Each structure stands twice: as C-alpha cells, then as structure tokens.
Length: 270
Image (cartoon, rainbow, N blue to C red):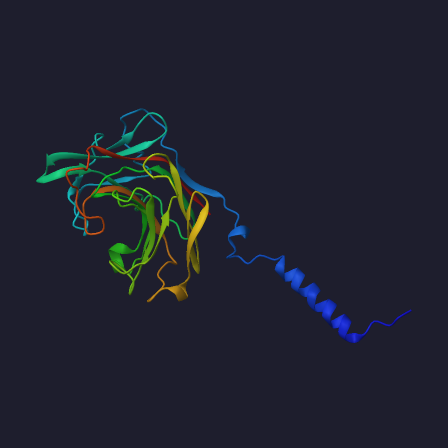
C-alpha cells in the first residue's frame, strides 16, 4: 500500500478547514439573519379614521428645519385610513395657518422605539416636482443630544420629479445635512408612483443595509462614515409627505394636487 506523503495530509486538512468555515455564516451575513416580528401596523380600520393613537403621534406644525412649505395637521383630510388596509397621507394645495399647502407627519416617538432589527414598509409614492415623501428614523435621544448626534436613518426618500429613483441615507455627526452617507436605487422601466414597493433596512450593532423589494443596494459599517457611529440605541419611526424643501425643491405649474402617499403596512422585526 502506498504511503500518503505528509504534504498531502496537510493540504487535505487545509482544504477541509476551508470548507467548514465557508459553510459558516457570520452574524453580519444577510443570508444568516432570522427575523421575528416585534411590532406592526397593518392599517386596518374604517375609512376616514386617523391612524392608531396607541402607535402614532401626529406632529402638527411646519418647516421642521428643512424649509418645507406645508403645514402638517391632524385632520383626516391629510392623514387617514382608506378602509382597504392602507394609510393615506394627502398633500393638499390650500391656504391654512399662513401656509399654501397642508399634509401630515406621523411618528412612533415615545410609543414604539427599538435598537437594531429589520424595519420595512410597503408604500406607493405620489408624484410631481416639489413632492417629498419619506420613511425614516431618528434616535430616541434627540431631545437630549440634538441632531445629528442622535442619528438619522433614511430608509427611503423620494423626489417627486424623479419617479424611478429613491435614496437611502445615513446622517450623523460629521456626515449630515447635505453630506450624508447615501446611495440611490433606480427602477428599470418602472416608476415608484404606479405601484407599491417595499422599502427596508436591516440594522445591527456594526452594519445598516438598505433594500428595495428585497434587493440589497447599500451596506454601511462604522468604518464607512466620516465621523462617529451613533446607531447603537433606540430609534423611532417617521412617515411624512412634505411639500417643497431644500432636498427636493419647489412645486411648479405641472405639480398636480392633491398628492397621496399610500402605506400598506409598517413592520418591525427583531
């Protein structure tokens, strides 16, 4: 019987180790994640009713630091269930509280906040120059440390004049305002205002990943940002439909009103 040479044994052992480790996924591997539903709103209820007050606050006011044009209200005309399992945020051109537009902005601040997980929503966009819907998160410590130290995760931002493009961004100290960590996602031969699409982030202690319809298009880790990583504490959810602002510009003569942002569901997993 031929004797196996020591070098052969070493090589075989090396390749066996490689095979074992290649079959093991790290905790940051998207394929290795297992998610359990922790919180959701499916927006079931009678048409014309406001979103569930146990889940959502309705912010009332204007600007919010972005030079927006609308006045956000708590009226059913601007935010209500449609009776078909959706929440509809409606931007209206009207004179109200010294503003020329109304809309709505809802948050889970002090009602639902979570550190890490998968956060997703299925949304159909409005359309038109100066229309700015967003699905995003702010650090729950914002009242204590301010922005951008609290951190901001923009799961989805949409410029109404760019119907096939959305943006996912991260704001923190050293990379905020007009210089966030950001990336765009473009549909091919399709638009975000003609059908529903699912927008999500997966968030862990050292990564945040952005998805559209299950497609990963951006992944950011602490070493990728030009400043402090401030995403290791509770965040709350925000949905809003702005009119105008520094990010999107202003409505023009071709912008039709009313405009509606339709949300099928919001789901949060651990």
